Image (cartoon, rainbow over all chains, first blue to last red; front, side):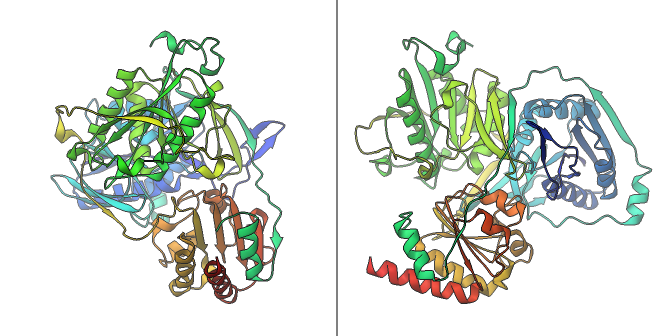
Length: 248
Length: 349
């Protein structure tokens, strides 16, 4: 089975996002693998271990270097890595275009049987790239998968929606974006990290030829500080919530 | 594309050109989602500010029209594709329905409530229709149509970014809780909405798309992402048993229980209840944070809540910085008292 996994980098949640004058400053940010992509990679590696002869190839579009992250991916069970190196920051549509081209290029016009992505990146949380990529590849897709059972014929998955669960059957080839809870990702071992150093990372420099669909015109720090009024008596709190806020 | 799009919507001097908007109405088990109704009403409010704007609706799947009576504001036409095979979400059929309706009405903007369904469908539509997609927009400002941009928090809620669509056709997934509207639109007065049933049509290439075989809704509970009141618990609740109190509170207030990440990682509560960066983003009217310290990851998921109450033993817990009201104390002592006070208050009412 050919399995593709899309990975991206996000700022570590402990990182401080600063501003220099009015411009966002990401220089002090530590970039890590998007947490949802860890579940995507783990699921791909588990399927590889179940279906003999499978190969897991990781794809990442990055304007900075994502080599370290891809090395980690190799240590976690990925077999090959393709870094699509773009000079400017692409929007979700452009990212999906670049991924789609990298994937069809890598598989020489054929399609992988499975494509895994994280549900969304934790930095922008748009959740657009995975389903856009499926549309561009012309394959079916299911987003936010929380359970997956694959057989040779097809795949049964579950997706969480507001207040319920959808039970879905789907055939290959298919793209899944995965939700937390699908699996518990393994940790890297020293041996795996050493071996990962020997595995290749293909670097694919690209120029973006499509125009973006959406642009970001500005970013500002968001301060949400409130003045907390401390109360000691819960009945007083109930009274305030009712009288001042008409909550019940 | 046609000349309708040659100028920004708000700058158009003469209103003889009509601007058309389409609102997607989502049903689950025949019940139209409140979030879709909120989106429709908010869009109507905006349309009323812009003469020459016409609003259409699209409701796929069988759902009684009666349930909408008195709940939809404004005027317009709602197309219903009431076929049984559209009861369960089917991306292929839904995508074609939306695309056909947009084309037929020559609409320039498509609105979805921000749900699991729209997050699945909208990106594919964006590519297929070459449309700008702005996901997760909070309630659109009254000044919104000027450039069609939307501002929303990014980077765990520490930054607010302004997104601008660059394509003439635009898709928004938006959370339009009436909580954000200072003067709620009166849905019952002067509404004039026509319902038009769409003809069923043949669809080919069935096998290409995933098939939702079954939908199982959790009975008798409100999803934490849709609840008006959320009672959330952190690790300090001490264990699974500690949440019984929160459930009781949620029942009393008609709200839902939420959880912080450590609680879900410990297996005390399901992931569906997790609030925060790797969980859900919620914006209830009232958020009661019980024994939650308030990590940046957690705040990312509840930063847009209306009134926030925090109960924590540690007076320096960061959660108090984003709270309107605070009680410093042990949840196991404070919560029973709060529950009692609430029950007493509600009985008297």
